[in-house]
Image (cartoon, rainbow, N blue to C red):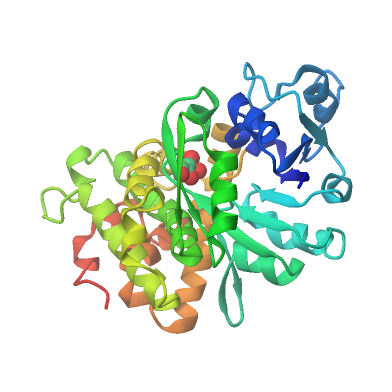
Length: 361
Ligand code: 13P
């Protein structure tokens, strides 16, 4: 059947989705119509032109991804409801902070029989505990939602460098295979895993680990401190301890989470990628270099040119969730990151190895 699809993302997140072949592949498959509607948060450029007009005229996002041509079938649309009204497949790629509002706006506006996939890394903290974004989409919109996460950096996908990703799916392998087929290119290898929560928690929690890695870099403790747990090589320990906390928390929250998920692209590979090359790491490094004197908001505005960091707000949400459940002491890395971010602890608290006791149960 011929389906149409929509991408829901603000323009700043176009980076992730822009690879030409990726878009071209969408139109080659039997699953989608020629047109991919892409919701873009409207901005007026310094020359007075609207960003959506520029994208539609030049096939290029002059603001966030200059020099990269989007597929001609991609139509930027500033109206959220209009962007989704014909869609049978929805791809969510927005900063997680906006997802609650977006879902509320979409309620009752989408067609029946819609499949969704979320590339959004983060969680909503509700009274009853953390709610993963795929769950928020499913609950608010009454549709099935898979996830795609993994070791990839947007700018590198855009220039077609090889990378991998993991699709987390709930029940239907057929749906997972459809997403795999839609996203795969010769340079973007996608593997399906039947573990939505595990894949999504990996993508979400690793951003907090990357903030910790950035702190360590900002303190100039050297590379050794980022793959062993010994005293001399504390920075290498950040990744190991972070991965350990990611796995322990994921399994506590969702006992169905599989150990093997942590060996997929979304797990250990994404921890390494983001701790070495991500924006969370970069901004956290600058924060530590300033001795915690400059705020994350200020640094984000200065360094990311309109893009939004995910790790700092995730650390806050995580802290609230851990506090709520009385699990704080079991996750010292996660809780220390938040306390550094808000200035309660100094950046060098991240290397207080006495914080990082035995494995959380
Ligand atoms: P940053 O947001 O830190 O750049 O992380 C990129 C990422 O999510 C890689 O999977």
